[in-house]
Length: 231
Image (cartoon, rainbow, N blue to C red; front, side, top):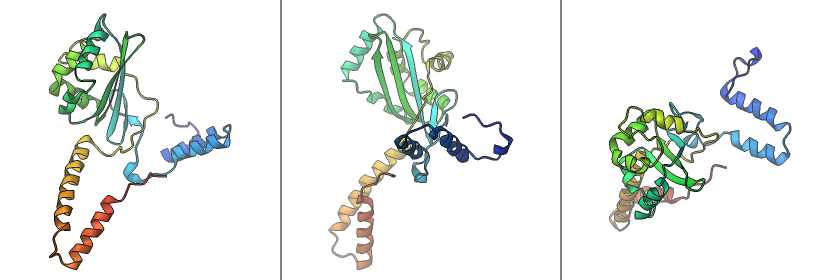
């Protein structure tokens, strides 16, 4: 975002700048578009608050979550080999679980199978993420990306330059839970299973005192309540 050169706005905060620029943009918009624009910049639950900043060398970051989108040309026969690799597992890439910062990744063929789009969401900064790929799933990376023109190999000192040169920063970037990492999600899942087992055990305990039973009923009600949308 480019700051204004107007000296009167020198002390303007980022939030104030966004609202000022949105108001300028809204002058020529129909009413429904103005409402939609306002919904983009209003205050939200701080636990769900994201951001729009660089993830490091390339890509955007929102809270703890970053994005990587790259487009590359495939070698002759590369698309066919990749299709056969993906068909072996019906497109499931569970082997990537070793990268504990990886939220998701996907491969999309286009231009008559001559090019491929690789898109992923991950935790943390760009350099650390690429290092994770190189150290935790190097074989899988080379198996897949060896079908891309110019791929130097995941262990090559040139691989980061190669990836950065093919990466395109997202123009818009949204994460539903920007503060929650993959490690957090897995911990929450373990906690939920343990808590459910505990509550099931306590539910059949007829010797609980009234205070404990009331506290457990309150806890059970709180965690079973559906999470509302932040509107």
